[in-house]
Length: 188
Image (cartoon, rainbow, N blue to C red; front, side):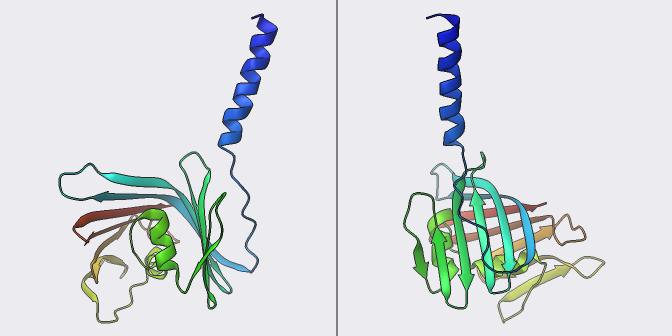
């Protein structure tokens, strides 16, 4: 193979590899974006002595005039899913898969990350809001009055690295169906 053929072969291979990392366009939000938070996430699940199962990537969470929208991306930037919730219900869009619908986002989010957690509660925690509906215990606050740790139902939540937008890191731990679950959000 000549050097010209090798160069064309290499360019073709490079184009295929980069095309595999392309992010399918799921479109822009169709309503007014009131707030946007983004960062990285990781989910680790372990049951007994089995190896840790995990998922990680980046996220963009938008509070919309009609609800909220969560985009989850792989570490290489490829789209994993877009979850949108409005008063009419929730939808899950995934590349090369039919759109799924449900009455709330919890079931749909669980199908992506493998852990059942209400997305609305996560959004409150990202905004450093803790609503005590009879389930919040062990609430600790820092000197500025911001929540730093608490338990909410089955979840133990730690919020730290505060900046002007809220917590910069959220760590959530729980045990679900005999599995130890750890969710970490690092917010930019």
